[in-house]
Image 1: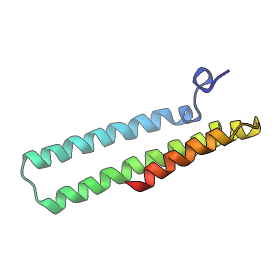
Image 2 (image 1 turned 90 degrees about the horizontal axis):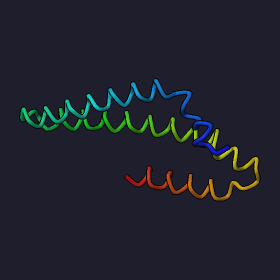
Image 3 (image 1 turned 180 degrees about the horizontal axis):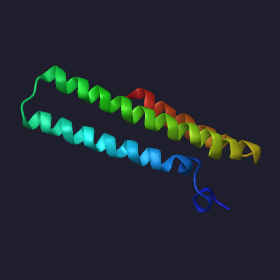
Length: 97
């Protein structure tokens, strides 16, 4: 059975992840309003930093679940090299921004 058929490991955290995503959506809309209202630059930058931190936390949680599930499973099945390469690519992209 593939991961998509049995569900990904992050599925156990789905309600919390969706709740966080809704908060992030609200933050993004709030920042948009700040631009519309010509708010002070530093206030906007602070809110953008908070938005980035919130998305980073979600990314870390999903990556952790990916490692615990997909990567660990591939290693146990002795074909983890491809999963590890994929993981490292995702990490490289994440830290380059």
